[in-house]
Length: 218
Image (cartoon, rainbow, N blue to C red; front, side, top):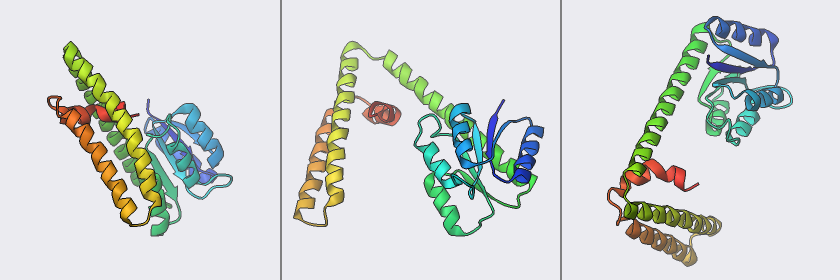
């Protein structure tokens, strides 16, 4: 059963949401402020979160920011519920990683449409991730010894390159436009060129990067 966490400090609104969602067959958990909501999200790992913005102790923006920094909750679909309708508030929520926005007063149809849409997108994303993982496993199973050794070397090279590039990028961020900055950019280009030359030895290495780079460079 799909589990939804509702974080809302106003009792009447919270009760209405719980009743509405439970009638649709969802397993609903509630919290009356941001702090208890944050703890509840980490404890129960819901499939979706509906959260008010303006709350005591911890507001919705802070809740979302904390959840996006926690590996266990980073990918949970998040819908803001608020009486605020100004563009600045909506933009801030979206920048933090909110998936949708509902403005009070809301209708039953608006809530259910937002919930169903986010759950469908999450399911599609998970299905795609499973398919990619299966393709990667099948690819690994088909490697011969030489290819496996080359792939392992490529993975290590990419990890090493990522560290180098991160260092150079941090340097670039601190420099104003200048000759020194151009030399740093050239260094980045040289590092990338070396890794690309190594990758060119692998057949279909573009496919390898698309399907495995996110996992290997971590």
